[in-house]
Every structure is written in structure tokens, then in C-alpha cells.
Image (cartoon, rainbow, N blue to C red; front, side, top):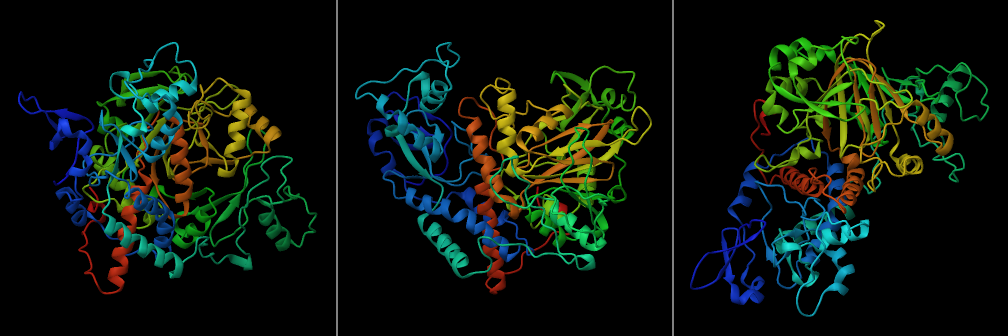
Length: 633
């Protein structure tokens, strides 16, 4: 029998004579023979899968060493899938096209190794299936276990809630591992061939597991100063070099100053030290009294892709300036009032998080009028659900041609792993999105404009407009970005000082905290953690690596636009974030895994294979679109 695709639930045909079992629109078996259900299903291709070959895009700039990184990330999951295919009663289904497949328990995207409940049709990931083993002792030999209903006051503990989420079947009955059928989206021969190709690449091919990007040439014979991690606490046992020491050493050598061995900034230190032609390193004063980590800043015209790659491989943020002339549209309040003023929108008060309904015109008419309004309002994630390109095509085109390092940051960027999704598949919505907000407050008790959080991938945020401040000085937005390696210490600090604030959720991912000036000072005093302090002005782009917790406080009314992207350098960080987000869904439905990282890597690998075929002369060059912005739908 040929298997195509199923709906999430079984459905039975209303017939008087023979009870037939359906999965979606596919007739599976006579209900009386359910024990042979899996044996009736054969491995077969779906017509929908054929579309992938037609929709697949090829990027000739996809570097061989990035193919290595893709293989290094994806090979182990594919090996596990090959073992999963040996399960008895295996069901084959195609990769989804029209929908995003997610685990019905933890909401993580499903790429491989899933299981389907033979009773209710719920599909769960391999991790959730493994978790069911802890509850096998509850499975009765006869009958069913009735669960306490969700919302019951007797479900007091996190453990009980987690157990119910894993065991939940129809009508609050429990299902166990014995009732699940293994599911795969892969053909064994195809999988074996791809794993073999990855083996060859990783064992004899280009690159290495610890591949380092090439270092850029720098002026005055200064070597690139790797911004290493600061000690993670005042009593940290590791003897690692603090971040700013190499920068200061360059300064000392250039000025022929004596080296004292101090890890603090020397007297007379000039914070603008050139590491690259046209670039500078800036150390900003934080109003908390804590010196910022050194930050690399580049004028747009001076930053090359090779320079960016070297900096980005260190996993630290940077700022690009001088972008306003690249935009053809003036992204200011008057433009949005004139063009979108009649649109309804949801406005959030930054301090209380209370949401109200308004219009675009009403919101933007208050920009710069600090005395004539109440509250610190923001219009965030605009548009909230629709695709930015579909809602604002002219703004999308303007942003796409202006955003720096387009091979990484654009939706169709060759080095943006997300760009390899087929044109006919449901790709993750990585933006762009607009972030428009009034002036906010970062003093004691302030909640800023955007609370402490981590993005699911890398991100770049461009400021297009800032109103003058109330005193007439130029407007800006203040960022605090923390090193990925300090995330545990930041979490510990928040748990110690606000034990009940996030209700059992991760204190960073829950997005309920803002580290005001007093809290940042205490964070450094207690944990030795400091941040990159950035004062973002109009025409400046802030690059935030995946895994770096960050927060923003607008010091004036600001208009910004941001987009997420997935760089090969930070795939491992994205994997960690996916696992952390999954943990948040154990007790409640928190957030769906829209990134689909492993599925994304799969399509990137197919691009790698296409590249190798072209190099070997075994494939034809793909046709190219006249307008690269139209390559993806």
C-alpha cells in the first residue's frame, strides 16, 4: 500500500458494514486488524516530495568549509535515524511541505526519529518518547489509567504536570510507549548514501571540526586581538586572559608604555584602537559604573565579509555604522502615518506589559512629544503574524538592499543557512520585524524597552530613526549584551534575587526581567559579569550572536528593524537554544520551535551536494533570477 500523508488524528468512516480505519484521507486497515497496521504500510515517495527538487535553490557561494560544518552537525542525527529505521512496524511519511511538523508534547520541530500514538494519532519526538520510559511502571496489564485533568488543583507539582503532558491521550486517558508506532521521513538507501558522503567529507575532506575562519590583515602590524572571555566570577579557577588585555597590550606597545600586568584599562588608554583598516574598538561607560566589554565598530564601507567572518567566529557582537544613506525610504513617523496610519495595531506598555488596541497613526503621532502622553509604549514585532515582505513589500526591498553583510543577513543570503529552505516549504519566519518604541527608563525599577532575552538565532538590528531627547540631545537606544558563556551566571543571579518571578521557567527565556543600573552593578559585584554596552544611533546596526542574552532601553523614541539569520559559525549555539526552549515546554505550551534547525541543515546539505556535483561537472548550472529578492517566496 502506498503511504502519502496523514492528519494529526485518526478518523473513522461512518459505515454500517465494515469498520475501516483512516489516517487523514488514506485508508489504512480494517479496524479489526489494527495489530497489523504497520505491516500494511510500505516505504514510498509522495508527490509532494518531488516538488522539493524543483523548489530547491542552489547558492554557488556556499563555502566548502561550511559544507563541512553542516555535515559535522547533521551526521549523528542521521545515524540515529538509520538505527530508528530498524524498528519493527516502521511507518514512512514524507517531509512536510504545507505545514511545520512539531512534537505534540514539547513543540520542538520534528525532523527525524518520531513516534505516533496508535490510539489518538499524536506524534512525538524521540526525546519525549524516551521520557515515557519513566512512567512505564504505571501501565496496567488491563484497562487504562485515568489522568487528573489539566487545571486541577491537585496537579500542584511541576513533576505531575510534566508527567501529564507526556502521558496525555484522548479523554484524559494515559498512553504509554507500548502504544506508539515508529515513524520516519527518510528512505534507508538515501540515508545511507548521504551518511557515507558525510563520512568522506569529514574524514578526508576540507575543513576540520575546530575550523577557524581566516584572520584579517590589520593595520600597523597589529595582530587581531581575540576578545576572549572575562573570568566568569571573581574567584573563577580558569586562568583565561580577560577580554580587553590584548587590546590594551596593543595600545601599550604602540605607545611604548610599561606593562604593569594589570587586567584593567591603563591610565591614558584611548578606547579607539584600530584592529582593522577603518575599524575601532570602543569601551563605553555604563551608568551602572561598570566598564563595558570592548566592542568592535566598523563603518559600513570598511567592513568586508572576511573581516566580519573573523569577528563573528569569536561569538561576540559588533556594530556597523553609516547605513542611513543606503536606504531609499525615509523610515520616520511621518512616513508610517501617511502610508499605514489607518492600520489597527496592538500597543504594549513597557513597564506593565499591558496590551491595548490602537492605530499606527495614533502611536506615531506621539513621537517626540514627551510631555503630552502617559506610559512608555511600544509597537513590537510589527507585523506580528504576517510576513514582512507580504505586508510591506517596499520596506522589505529597501531593507534587503541596505542591510550589511547581505550574504549572511538577507533572506536569500548564500551564507544564511535558513536560505536553503525550498521555495515551496514552510520556512521559519526570521523577519524582518519592526521594533518601534517610546523613550523608556533603565534606572532603579525600570523595565527598559525590551526585557532580557535570547533570540533563537543570530540577529542584526538596524536603527532607522530616533527623535531628539527631551533635553534636545540626539536620541539613541542603550543595549546591554552579555557573553554566551555568562548565561549560567546571569540565570543564577536572577534565581537568587527573584526566585518566584518566572514561575519555574528559565529566567532569561521567560523575558520577565530587566537588569536596571543597580542590578547590573550587583551582577558584576556578585558574579563578575559585565556586558557590552552599546549606544545605538540612527544608521547603526547591532549584530547579536545566538546565545547572547541582551536587553534594550530606548533613551528616546526610536524606529528599528531587525532580522534573524543562521550563520554556520553559530549552529551549535542554535542547537543549545533549541534544547533550552524545549525544556520550557515541559510544563506548559510556551513557544513553538519555528527555527526547525535540523530540517534547515538538511536542505543546506542538499545545497552542498549540488555544489559538489557542479564542481565535478555532473550537474547543470541552475537558472538564476534577474532579481535576487524574488528567489524565495
